[in-house]
Image 1 (tube, rainbow, N blue to C red):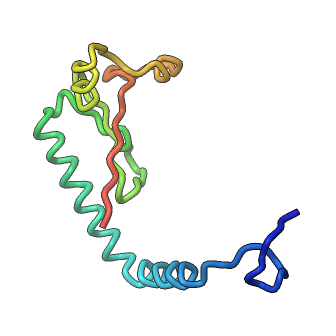
Image 2: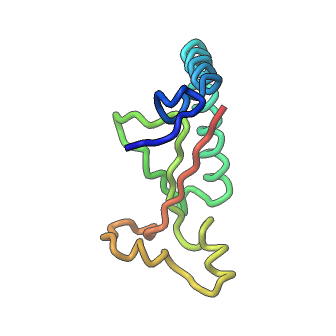
Amino acid sequence: MLFGGGQERNFRPGTENTPMIAGLGKAAELVNSNLTEYETHMLDTRDYLEEQLEAVFGRERIHFNSHFPDSETLPNTCNVSILGPGLQGVSKLLSGTVGPGWKLYALPSVDPYGQTPSSFHTRR
């Protein structure tokens, strides 16, 4: 049982946040009318990120986990594994531990790049 609602003549507790509801509606309208532009921008940004990661780490050290023949990927998501010390390796080396976190040891590994994927998400 919910109690309160003095602002509503004790009819019901809580009040809908009308400005937020209206704002959410406007945001949905904007996304719907600009979806193609947003998707193109996110794809271009993701592709640029992947090119730069490959340039920094080298083609032989980086594996893009979402690149499969005849498959689609999210326009804003880049998931990579890096052979050897990679992005997560820096903080682990500084902390004195090397290798994947303890939670990842429970997962079976067939990935020569280790159990250390990193995800990046672009936005508009």
